[in-house]
Image (cartoon, rainbow, N blue to C red; front, side, top):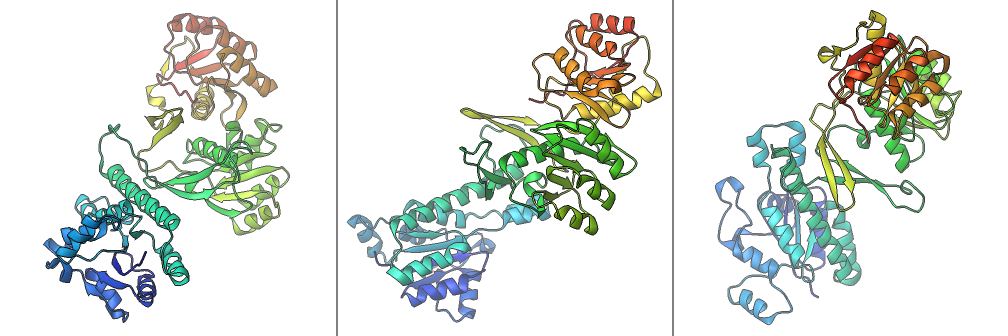
Length: 508
C-alpha cells in the first residue's frame, strides 16, 4: 500500500522534526496544525497547514483545530471500498495514510495542581478522536501515538516502502491503550464518587518480572498513575531485579512501617507476615528488637526502617541474610557496607503514610473487590476499659504499641508485646485461640508480664485463658462479640486488664 500523506499534530515535540524529515524523504506530504506546523517549518520541513484543507483557522482559542469532516473522512475512508474513495475524491479530501498524535499533558498537570479549570484545559479532545479514528482504520492508516515509535516507522518505510499489517495493528492497539489510559486518568482525577458504576484504573507497565509467585507463572509490575506513593515507585539503589514475592513482601513492610511515622521503628517480614516489629531510641535498637521477635523466621526476609540506615545498623544487618532492605535513605558509608552483600536488594522510598486517599483493590475470579484503605492510627482516644482492673501506665503504653503492630498481621491474629517490641506473633490461623497459642510459643518466657493484642474480638473466653496462663497481664481487642460479657468476666477472674477499641482490623 502506497503511503502518500501524513497528519502530524503533537503536544510533545520530542523527535518530531526528525520523524517528519524521515517521512518527507520517503515522498510523504506532511499536513500539520498550529504549534506543530510552526515547529516543523522552523526545522526546514515543508508543511501544508491543515486549515488549507478545512478552510477554517483554529477556533475558540485552539479548542477546535482538527475536528472537521474533511479531516476525519480522510482518516476513516476504507481503501478497499470504491464508494469511500470516490466519496472523498469528489470533494477533494486527501486520504491520510499516517496519523501521528500525542495528547495534552493532563497527567503531568495533575502532578502540579488540583485546580479544576487548569485541569479541564488539559483534556485533549481532537487528539483522542484522531487516534481512535486512525486506530479503527489501521489496515489503511498507520497511527503513531508514542514518540518512541517514530524510529520504528521511519526505519520500516526506509527498508520496505510500507508498514506491514502486524506493525500497523500493534500501533493501533497501542493507540487504543493510550486513549483508554488517558481517559482513566481524567476519570480518576475528577470523579468524586467513591464507587462509580464503571471503575477504570490507569496503570503503566514498570517492568516485566522473571516470573510470578511461582516459576511457572508469568508476571509484571504496573504503576498506578493516580497514586503518588507505594512500593511500585520505590527506587532500587543496589541489587538484582525484584521478584514478584519480593514486591509483595516489601508492600507488607511498608504497611507495617506506616503505623510509626513519627518514631524510629523497624519491621522484619517473611512471606507477607511480619515476624518482628519494634521501635527504639535509635535505629540499631529498633532493628535488634524487630529481629529478636523471631530470628529464625527472619532468615531470608525483608527488613524495613522508618529512618535512614546508619553505619551501626548496616554493620549489624550484615551478619544476617536478608533479601531486601527498605528505608527512606541510607548514609553513604552504610550504603557501601550493605553493597558488599551481592544478593541484597536496597530500596529507597518514604515510609510515611500517603497524602492522598487510597483505595485497596483485590482481584478475584471474574472481578475485583474495591474498598477504602484502613489508614494508620491507633485510635486510643476511643478506647473503653471494660475490665475491673485498669491498665497500668506501662501496660497502656504497651497496649497502644501492640494495637498498631497487630494491624499488619494476617487474620486471625494475636500478638504479644512489650512497650517497644513484639515478642511473639500468631497470625493467619482459622482459630483465634490457636493464634494466641502460637504467639505464646513464639514469645516464650517474654510472655510473662507482657500484653496481648487481637485484631478482632475473642468469641470465647478460651483465648483469654491461654494468654493469662502464659503470664499476659493486659489485652486490647475490638470487642463486639455476643459473648463479650463472658469474656470480660473471665478476664476479671484472671486479673487481666481489658480494653475494647471498637474498631476491627481484619487483614485477609
